[in-house]
Amino acid sequence: PIWEPTKKERKSELQFLTNREIETLEYLAKGFTPRKVADALHISYETVRSHQKNIYKKLHVNSLMEAVVVFRG
Image (cartoon, rainbow, N blue to C red; front, side):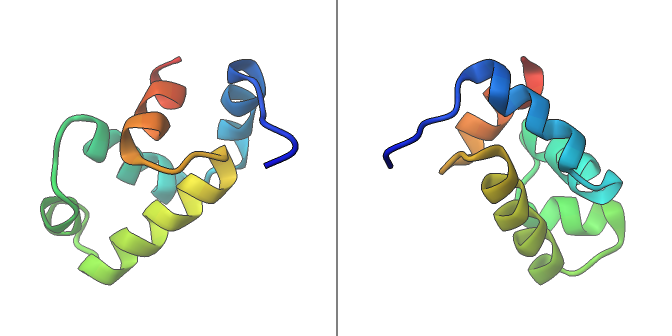
């Protein structure tokens, strides 16, 4: 991409995550698989995957590892 957000800019994007997306990211950051996150939050696997995609888009990242780095600051 032409424009690549800085770490600080990505961190500020956390404010745009929904509470459920933050909960999902917290579990994923702890090493839960998407299926385990679904069980823990009592939602479907597909919903977890949808949250993941939204998280990546909002944080301008391409992987869970990148999202966790931004999340943990």
